[in-house]
Length: 349
Image (cartoon, rainbow, N blue to C red; front, side, top):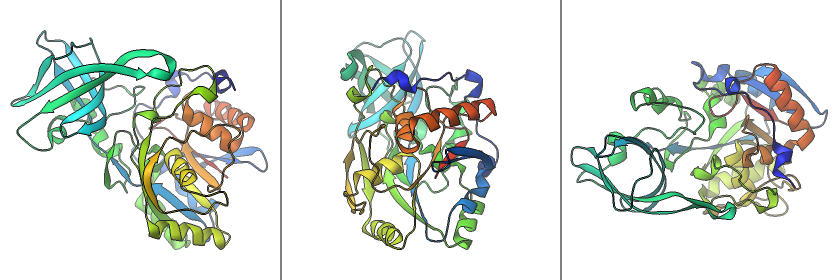
């Protein structure tokens, strides 16, 4: 299947650079797979489309401040984004700015420094040479990232300095984030407020949690020409015995399993058997979902609007159908929906 099937024109003006002041005021495009139609709502109306038998599953990962700014001895500024911890004080990371030299040392703050150990190929599948650095952080103090880091926003959201990131420290986290370790937010969860959770509770709709530590793969571009040749980066997940039991009970009672975001969807599909029975597990997943995939565990999907040619758009197209997804996206663009991480969302039922 050609990756070009997932191309569409996304104007820069449609990419939300900042979140709305009120989380649950985001627009919600409800996409109905049965009728092949869609209609406009607001996120705070989400409970109206769920029933008391349904279960909502959210990702409770918390984004760590894995991006920081530094200056080389020449004065040139570098933006460094850590994407995977290898061992104590040693990470894999991406760099924006002039490429450093292996062994180069930079001062971050008093008594804090980073050493660029060596460079590896970021994306071997597409022959993408270099780009991934092994970086050592040296500090006599603990929690170095907490001192100097900011949340690592996706590359399409631009901030020029650490000061410009201040508002994102709270806003790029879901209100239920509690498991530290992600380098990107499960953005479908950013729309939830206590008001929405109270409305769900009043209706008898249960909300359950799992953890998938979102990594670089969530915004890594698909560089191959054929969908089947793309490889998704592995991410660690955790699903408890209690949560898996409650999900299975809901399914047995005729309830729907609503995945809040593509990370939840991938995790649930990873831990389910052929009959959709959920297993309590901890492990890694590199499950890549694209059209032709048979969903076993997820009945409805809440998700933001995604980049052209991205693995996330492919997952949505697998769930809703490629043609319906294309029509819904074109409608959303025409109606002024805000796209990507800080944008609006859709509910596919």
